[in-house]
Structures are given as C-alpha cells and as structure tokens.
Length: 200
Image (cartoon, rainbow, N blue to C red; front, side, top):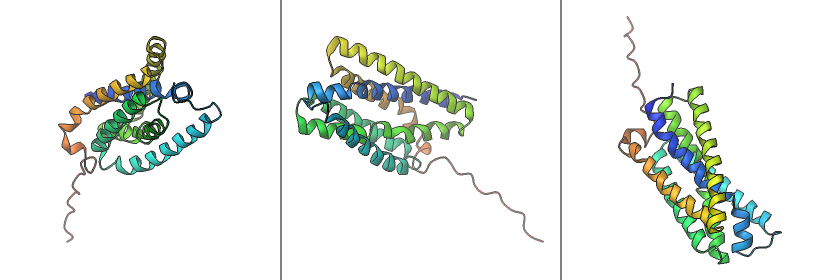
C-alpha cells in the first residue's frame, strides 16, 4: 500500500530526476558551444564525468543507510552550488570542468538516499517500488521537456538554471523528514528483542 508518508517523498524524487535530466541532456552542447571543447574531447570529458559518478555512488551508498537525510541535504546543496557555478562559469574552461565533475559526484549519485528514504517508509513493498520508479520516470520526461523549452527560449544555460531551481525545491521536500529525526542517523527504528521465557 502506498502510504501518505511515501506520497510525501515521491515529488522530491521526481524533482531530482527533472533536475538532472534537464541539465545533463544539454551537457554535450554546453561543453562544445559554451566551454569551447572540440567534439572529439567530449567523450573523454564524459568518461571523467562517469568516473566522478562512480566515486559519488560509492560514497553515498555507504552513507545512505545511516545518514539518509543529512547525506541528501548535503548532496542537494552541493548540487545546487555546482549547477550554479557551471551556469555562471560555463565559458571558462577550468571552473567549468570542476563544476561538471562536481555535478557528477552529487547528481545521480543521490539515488541510494532516495531509494532508502522511500523504502524505509514503506518496507520496500513491490507496489511502492513500482510507483517510485514511475515518479522518477515522469520526472525525467518533464525535465527533458522543460530543458528543451528553456534552451529554445533562453539558450544552453537554461537547463542548468532549471536544475538549480529544482535543487532548491528538492530541499523543501526534505522538511517533513527534518521534523522526524528518528528517520535518520541510524536508519529505521530497531525493534527490541522479544523476551524469552526462562528455562525451567
């Protein structure tokens, strides 16, 4: 059953998908048309981006269970900083590379936190996982569409600004969890062991 607690968390995960799909969908064009890299250099830059994502996944995966909300808060905050930095310094090579790598470190790597947050609320029921995946897919579709609309209206920086806005909105979706400190720092509440009858 999809509970009210789960429904509170799904919009934030959809926004995360919107944020990343919009920003990453135009990454190649931003690197070539704004930063000035050649088309031949882009695959190597994307390999570096992927390596940053692997490192981020390893770190976040270790922290997601015990410090879910704190990790997601820090990740969203850093993601907002990196998106803003890339949007502002996209035409300056060194900062653009640094901010791109930062987006890789704390972008899609927040997935373990999102999954843990939802599953902890609903005990990983199959229906909840299906609905959760559907919300993420919906976010990808909406984010890609909004990114395309933004590029057409305002240029290649628009998806990055859109991602920045979505990151701030994502922070607000964590507010209910901040009012429930028992949901973080150690994971779900562990039930006390049952008392065994004394041996006769």
